Length: 364
Figure 1: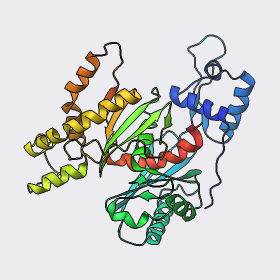
Figure 2: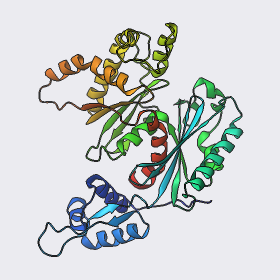
Figure 3: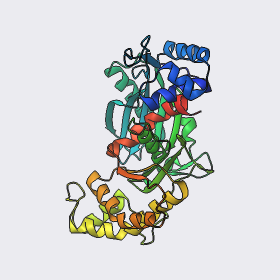
Figure 4: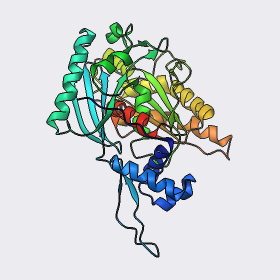
């Protein structure tokens, strides 16, 4: 199935973003916020409606005169597919236009197999998932891929050790050739940051830092609703913040527990071994978080990734004293909200699926 790229104007993207941020909004309110003329709004909204991206809600009867029709994002207007590679698995998520997951599935993945076999597996997984969920005729904006590893030269990615044979490949080119649809590839943490930011929970925010504790320790940054990839597309590579040499990652906790004959699932978050690991990584997390606050000044910092939510909560609690002292010194400064993501490990594939939506609808 060939998917033609969807191209929108800057004004159309601005109107869509205003609708997204406000859940629903009238044309007159859009005019006040955007500075566009009534005629321009009418024409652009007509085109967006024709494309199936927006719809009219119920009449607003709370105002005098002719009731106005609010505009909403049409969540059924299109879909996007996300593929994420985790240890031993391929995860697939399909999102609607509001960033809500409508299909999620997982399939074992032999990381040592030739890359061509992985391409075949991905292609078949996408086709089967869309067909079995009656989505094969739905409008698909594109496919996003979430891959671990930093960029080496702007083209090649230093993938994790099990996927080291991918390091010589131009993944964006290879994935683009595999499925006949617009394709984007991003670092798993940057993708997760987009998935979290555009999940619908943060519509009033314009900036966020996402700190992932999964295979490694990394961050993604959103400023003015845009992903900040950095000069080398490696912004957020905070794994070097390790004064103790112990990285605050799911992998490092798992390794520490294995040394004691324990496993992370199941384990009580209050187990002495977990508390000792928390003590060991506390300074690293505190340094990374406070540096982020001072350099970026985000509205919210979200901790997420493969790490169990209850342990992530204890990670945040572990540096609250440092956090409080920081803002005692600057009493007029607004402290960002620090929370644990609700999406867990699923945020990686969700973020991958957000890549086509972000680049097509939201990035101006």
